[in-house]
Image: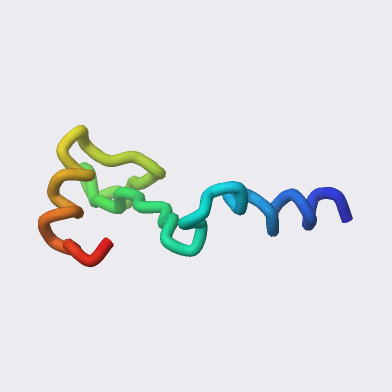
Length: 54
């Protein structure tokens, strides 16, 4: 029960919690699928340009 409560309340302290997204990387490297919760240093700038309403 505590685990579920924690998962459902994560980031709820933020007044814009409904606008928080997790962005990750999916790629193919040497024939293998790789990925994870990471992006390059310019990702925030590029996302703001591509999705200005957020």
